[in-house]
Image 1 (spheres, helix red, strand yellow):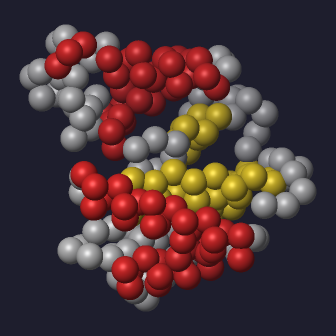
Image 2 (cartoon, one colour):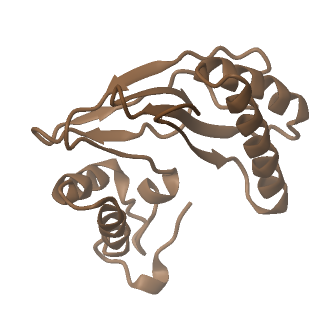
Length: 188
């Protein structure tokens, strides 16, 4: 995105199957092109992407997404959260959490939706976890959801590990949801 800058994106499409996959592919391309056009303006990139995606949306499909620009020099993230699960920042100094809440609605829901940018500055050893509801809504055989509280506990317990090991700890924790035989783990 620029010198010492990196664009990040996570998204989740409504629906399932081939129509949802095609809608996600379209959305990815449109967001990516707009991110290039509006390199330093995440809210403008998502606003314009939303206009294009909404015009092509069929049967009420939409995409929740989180898009941001990480700046290594400033140790900051400028972001737009379009109705996606709020990324979690676990602060390295004390293990407290900060959420990055929605700054606009899901993309494809309304053609003239407004989006604003948020900005967060990272301290040393802070970590940010982006996820979809496939993690928090995973259920065991008793239909007990994994939930955000368990996710936070897992992140807090693994916060000193390298990124790949934090991911592994989260996935293992979901699989170890009490009362869940591995073959019965489901996701909504």
